[in-house]
Figure: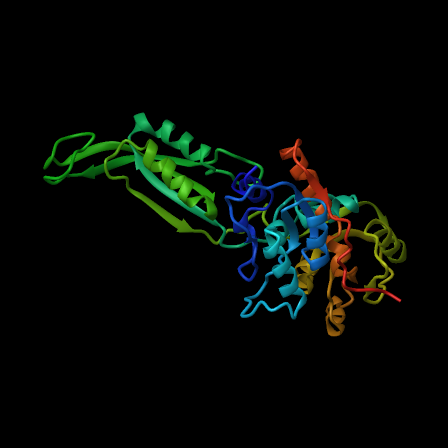
Length: 364
């Protein structure tokens, strides 16, 4: 199977447009035309993981963290990044990273944590902004249902738990064609007043080219009038972190032990106990200190994340329990999710879970 056949499935797993602007996701190394013999899924595409891929005849590595995060000016093998990249290139191994594209997915990193902790009534903690756009167009009544349905098929009209959403209003459209026109209704140089339907639909910004293709293909007018706006609305189903509820409330020490067991943590750093029950829990895999305020505003009793600094524990402000469960630990089940997803898509292809523990943090 060629890599180009696998890329759309990987983008279905974690749409690249979901990624944060600072990130580097997608195909990092490789040629879309190369034949893929097997896929190795890992957390970090380090040199020992590349060795594992070679040993197991996998020439595509799908990793969570991008091994190429910032630019490389030299590739001499002096750093762990350069060594991994050199070995991958020498052995014709492609590398694909998902990172924040999967962080922001409603079924991604943070949903995986919620599932592991059996949280219910979950929703996005930090919804993605400026990701929704609105299309407004006009057509004759005879064309409006066909056109609207085509826009729905292209992905427009999805709002939260609802699909095929639109607003339609009747009005009068006017136009007059010049000598180069070929109007569907009326003649050149004729002033035309015609019944029209105004169609308004929202869509996720990465679908814009697909939406416009459907618009032009299914519209009857020679010149299609349309407008696209960027909306300030927050996306309900895309964003970083999640918040949910435990089935049964716990005291703080029992809760941390529960988290330690479920997330396989060696240790947990936490803020001062408040002697309050834990019921509502916010989570954010990886470095999530920026979301402490969100967790407090949404009434979380506890916020689980990683990479908290000394002074950030003060930001609990006696309002919630902050717990640093470890960066790797917070994301440890992500590679299992990726493997399960790919096996369902490619049941007769070699999808292998890496056996390498790439956590650089050790505990004494």
